[in-house]
Image (cartoon, rainbow, N blue to C red):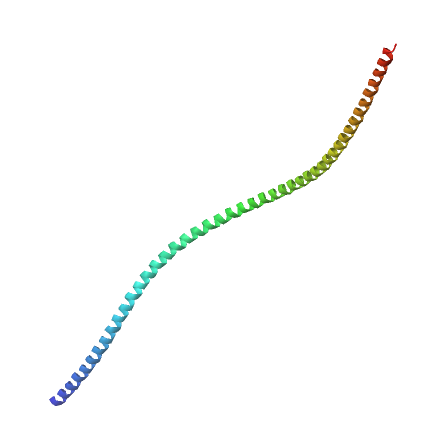
Length: 164
């Protein structure tokens, strides 16, 4: 019976060795998996920390961009107001330009009429000057004839007066 116990004991030891070997192999695999999972966990923690930093940076960038957007919107509103004011000013200046252009056209017409009147006046003055010169020439001729006649009369008077 001892032999049977020894044999059962031997089989039990072999079974225990097989269970221990299997458990050792399983523990080794589990340790490797645990090491792999820890490495993955560390990598994910690092990635998570990087993502947190990136998220924090993105949040600050977002805040900065929102501030810039608000400033841009304000500048756009002010530029629109200025553009509207400039457009109104442009419209007023356009109306004023058109008014001045109309006034210039009227002045040009007046100047043309004045030039025609001046040309007519100059022609009238020239004609009057020509008439005055003709009349002066006729007067001078008449004076010369009168003087000649007066000289003849004086000569006649002298000759008749000397003969008395």
